[in-house]
Image (cartoon, rainbow, N blue to C red; front, side, top):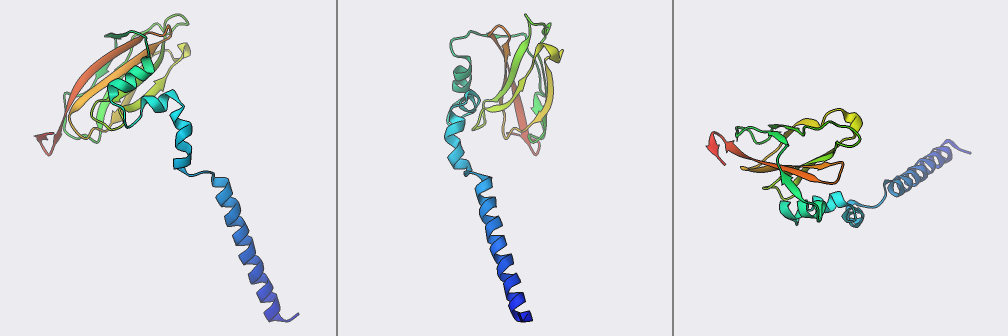
Amino acid sequence: MSELQRTSNRRDFVIAAGACALTLTSAAVGPRAEEKAPLLDALPEAKAAGATESWETAINVLTGDAKVVDGRIILELPEIAENGNVVPMTVMVPSAMTANDFVRSLRIYSTGNLRPLIATFRFTPDSGKAVVSARIRLAKSQDIVALAELGDGTFLRRTKNVKVTIGGCGG
């Protein structure tokens, strides 16, 4: 076998192996994101964060017939945020965090976003405290709503308005 034939065979082999690897990689990646969307629609979290729903609808989908009580949540946000890209937030729900009295989850909603659900935090009695601190992004002045689900199935809510300034001007 001549050197030219060996080079040609190697080249054909490399091309065939590359095509095979590309085919296997494409199959391993799975369906495109738009094909996965119907599966997400079946999840309560996805429904609660739906872009077509208002924040009130998102909360109503989550709470169902349960009564939502205002109070007991400590929601720390600045009254005026000079930079809407990094708004500091701390949320605390006073609780004994025992098997009978604990915070199951804490959800943060924005009244001015297309997708109202900003974040969901889950707790157990072993968490010790129901406290979270984060920085959130707000494009404009709006209300932030904290919704806590307690272990007994009741819900607590607290709302606070944040005014976002843009270049020193109100937004």
